[in-house]
Structure formats: structure tokens, C-alpha cells
Image 1 (cartoon, rainbow, N blue to C red):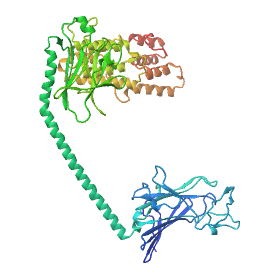
Image 2: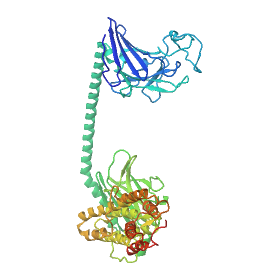
Image 3: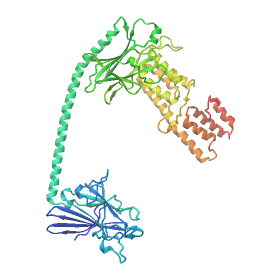
Image 4: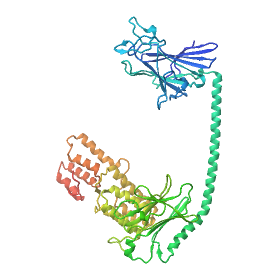
Length: 597
């Protein structure tokens, strides 16, 4: 006889161990909130069977008809349930969909054929213990059990279980858990298996590890072979890349040297595994007016070699008066072209020479000013131009805007046209959008073009002078504006370091934009107003402070700094409204500029 306390979280008290020549028997007791469960584990050496018997040794908790249920499963040693082997399931117990645990009803030790009787106004169970009846013949709780019998080969290391009263026979569902806070009761049964079974399990684990190690080594060998093959192909591709690049240049030179054709724009992109040349071609001898009204043909030439699916060009057109990509008309489509998402199409490259792939787009409508494209390798590989963004090819010249002379670069003229379109035609436009687009202009368009940097400065100077709208049909929160502003000026600071020749333009541009702020800096003023409102209940709905709070929430602009200073002047003058309006007018904020409440 051995007595000891619980040796682990959720583990019951093992009260005795009995051993005979053929049978080893162990007992545990588990207690929780008025419920006592005794578990007996018997291992028979002759047939290798293990029997687990869960028995209730306490009285009823809710009423004598309550149905006790065992919620149980196996475990490899932790507190996570593992679905038990099918051989362990008692009759009537089934797996639950998506669950690792199973549930088994406790039943009486002996069945009697007595008819169902009413207990406390409900029907009693069919199975009752004969000795549990009182003088009135009514069944009482106690002695119910669950019996699990299985071979030691399928025995887990641990049994995890809980017990609960089911919502039957007028009872409320009630769960019984370990008093030490564990998620489940723990009953280790791994030591109940024989030495032979333990040796077999060790051997199974050893063979499994050997198989896993063999599979790992084989996988590493294959990966090494595949890597070597890829490196060999890359080396071959690099060796041939220069030759293929020359072939692509020769294809372009055919149009550049032609007496009947001219190439107004040529873009070269160097990818890791190949080169792409995008260029426009139009007849030579066109007048200035025709160059502004007749789009050129677009060519995309590459020497890029990809394995598997063929390389495709995902492309669309830039149409006057419309934003973003526009799907081209079918008259423009090259061979083997298919529509994609209503905004673009995809065309397969045509091999015109060994290693030279071409897509030629022609018959482009007169209202098209540009050609946009990215590369696509089906099904999921997309390749933007190096550095990010779309390839953009200008297909016709832009009529100079008033004030732009002929000495302005074509790129700057196109940029000015694009900015005018956004400022004049976009229905929703704010400082936040302006700063965001400014970052795109810096990173993708300006480069070392002085005229483009000058255009960026003029744009921001007009914004500073409020010649351009600060807020149009869009709700901007303070944190959004401050973050966009900080991103823009941080990008300007980086370009100041990189573009030595453009520093004077960049410095003037930065003088037109505040420093912005990240995190909660832009949100703090609005949050502080909420604190003021909370401590001054008189400033409720409809008050000036509440209106300003709503303006900050939906219509944030730099004017709010002036409004804040005007409010401070109003309070310092003991409520003099003339002082409030004086500060506003002195800083250029009039009644007309303030949005309606």
C-alpha cells in the first residue's frame, strides 16, 4: 500500500498500488466541488490488456436523476488533448467533428428492467443501481461508472479528463475541474504498460527518427542539386545576357536609324534575370501639332528568360481625363492578348529572334497620352520596374501649359499636365493626397531633372499660398495628415542628401511644408479637446469647442493652428470675441475660409 499527495498539476491522489503475478492495479482519487471520482487502472500481463474504470463515489450534486458525463482524451504528456484510439472508445462513444476529445456517459454498474420513474418531476435514467434505491423505490445517484478496455499497444502516456453534469432530467450543465487551477484532471498511465511494450515503443521512435533523418538528408541533397542546377543556369544566362542585350539594342536601333521613323522616348530597365527596353515609335517629319495629337506605337523588348509559364506583359493605357489604368480597345491588342480585370490586358511576348521577345502595340486612339505596363509570370509572380512602380511610356507630346516655354523638359511638361489634372479634375483631393502624390513624383519621376524639381517646388508653393484647395470632399483625420506630411518632408530630406545638384530646389520645397509628425502627434490636439469637453459639461453639443473638435476629426488643415491661437487669445482676454477674430484675420483665416459647422 502506497500513499502520497498529488505529484503534478491536475493530477489526483494515488491511494494504492496492488500487484500480483498477472495483474498490476493502481487507484487514484479526484475531488472537485462536492464530486469524488475514483479511477482504477488494471494491467493484465497475460493478454496485455489495460482496463480503466472511472467510478463516482460521492452523492448527487443537483438531484438523484443527474446524468454524469466523462469528457476525456489522450495526451502525449502535455495538457493538450489527443484523439484516443478507436479501440479505447466504449460502446456508444463516437468522435466529435473537429474535436480531439470525446464524451462518454456514466452508467450504473447493474442494469434492471424497472420502468422509468418520475424524480422531482422529471424522468429518471433507464439504468439504475439496484442497491441505490431508497425505501420509496426511487433511484439515487452514486456508483455510476465508465469502463475503458484496450490493448497496451494503443495506450497513451496520459489520460486527460473532466466530468460534468449534462442538461438532462431537469439539471443545469455543471463542470467539475481541478481545484489547483489546471485545465483538466491528469492521470498518467504510461507506466502501466509492460517492459516489452516500452521497448517496442522506443524502437518505433528510433526508427521514426532514423526515417526522418534519412528524409532530411535526402531533401538536403536534392535541394543542393537543384541549387547547383539553378546556379549553373544563372551562370549560363549571365554569359548569354550581354549577347542578348546587344540583340535587343539592335532591334531598337533598327527604328532609331530609320529615315522614316523616330523614337521620341526610350526607357531601359535592368532586372536581375534580364533587361527590358520600352520605347515609342512614330513616323518622322510630323508637325508639332501632329506630335501632340497622334500617339506613337509602343514597343516592349526583353531578353528575359523564364522557366515554366511564358512571360506576359500586363499593360493598359493612360487616357486624357481619366484616372489610372484604362483597358485598351481590341483594335490595339497584339496577338495572344486577353483581358484581365477591366483595367488592363495581358499579351504574350513574341520571339522575333533567338532570345529577343517583343510586344508591339499599335492603332492607339488619339486621346491616349501614355502606356503603362508591368511584367507577369503566371500564376502569381509580378515584376514592377526596378525600384517599384509601373513602367510608363509617353506616346505623344504635351501641349505646353501657359507659362511653360520650349526650354522645359518633356518630362516636366508631362508632370505639370498630370498635376493640373489632379488639382482640377479630382472630386476628392486634400493636403494628405497632395503630399502622398508628392512622394511618388520624387521617387518615380523627378530623377535628376531640374525642371521636374522646379515644378514640384512651384506646386508646393501654390499649396502654401492656398491657391490650391487644402480640403475638397474628403474627411482627413489629424493623424493621417501629420503622417503624410512627415513622410513627404522625410523623403525630401533624403533626396537632399542624394541629389547634390537639386538641393536649392529641395530646400525651397521644404520651406513650403511643415515638419509633420508620426505616432499620435497629429491626434493629440483632438484628444486634448475631448479632455476639455469632458471637464466642462457646458461645452456640449453645438458649442464652439464641439464644432472645432468635429472639424479636426473630419477636415484637418494647418488653419487649426491659427484657430487654436485665436482661442487662447479669446480666453486670455476674458471672452473678448473681437480678440478671437483679430487673431484669425491677422493670420489670413476669414469667416469665408472657415468650413460651416
